[in-house]
Structures are given as structure tokens and as C-alpha cells.
Length: 152
Image (cartoon, rainbow, N blue to C red):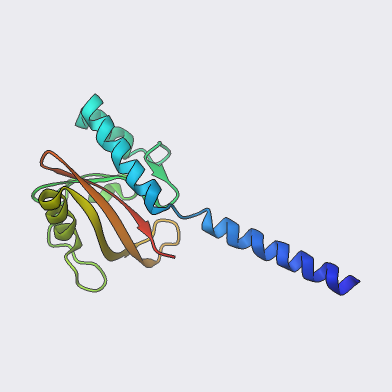
């Protein structure tokens, strides 16, 4: 009887750990929704007010590993919810861990097709490790609004 109780407790505890880990990651649907909310805010309140909200670490545009980034057509980071040191930097040629110029890919996709997903590798703000990431982008004028998900 004690073995069964122990097995059940181990099973329940393992389930809690997996659930807690999964809760640390946003989903593709949440990333798309966040980009759409960000675009709506920019249209309603303007860039300056929107960027303040996007860059607020405890704000509504930073959720677990999800955050908003806004890039202009030249590849300059205008807003970044996870790393304010990137704001104002010209990053068009920035490459990921595999050598992919992913900022260029994000901007080209948004400014070309209007929206879509780009895969690359980037530091995860939750784990601090380089992880595979897929970022959803949408065009708003000459700006690219982006939010990505880390692949588990």
C-alpha cells in the first residue's frame, strides 16, 4: 500500500513540475494576440505612449517569455520589452547563433508580406539560454511589430 501511495505522490509532483515549466512559456496564439494589441495601441495612442508601455517590464506587454519589439524599416530597434539596451541600436545585420541575419528577415517579411513567422535562435529571458524561437511580425506603416515564442 505504501508503494502505491509513494508512486501516486511522485506522479502528482512530477505533473506539477511539468505544469509549472509549461506555464513559463507563451503560445503562438498569445504572441499573435499581443502583436495585434500592440498595433491597436499604437494606432489609438501613438508611438510614444505605446513604446512606454511596451518597454515596461511589469506592464501588460511583457508576459513570461513574451514581449513586444518594434523595429523600423532600416533595422533600428525602437522598442524592446526584454532588453532596453537594444533600443536605438541599428541591428539590421545582427545574426543569431547560427549566423542568420534575423532582424533583416523579420523586417523583410513584415514589409513584404505584411505578416508572418520567422525562426531563429535567441537568448530566452526566462532561462537565459540560447533557444530556438519563432517570431510573429506585422507591418504597421514602416514599422515591424514583433513578438516571439520560444520552442520547448
